[in-house]
Image 1 (cartoon, rainbow, N blue to C red):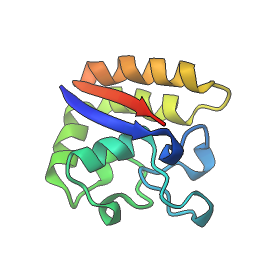
Image 2: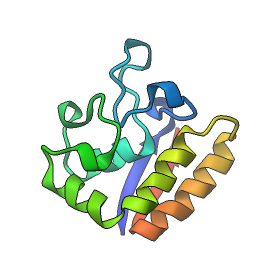
Image 3: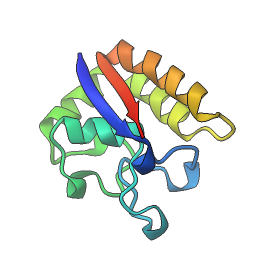
Image 4: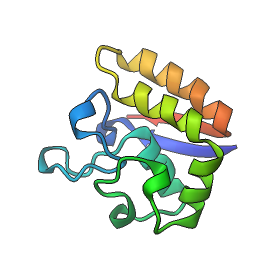
Length: 111
């Protein structure tokens, strides 16, 4: 199981119009979706994921690309859950925890 720490102050969620693994929007600078935190754990650099919409598009990191190909459908569920408007954080974290476990990922949400 891959343990991924998601720092809530840097977690970009519920903002589908600026969805990215690592935001290139200056207002959301240094913020990442939950899969962005996973990408970093898999060894991707910030430059590898800045403005990139999905893990499978991280062509500069073979671990990200391989993981994405293995878990494509489950990752799609994670992107949707991360970006859905109207979910409160506790619901979003619970759902992402279940989705993560399907991929062998333990998302740990910290302040």
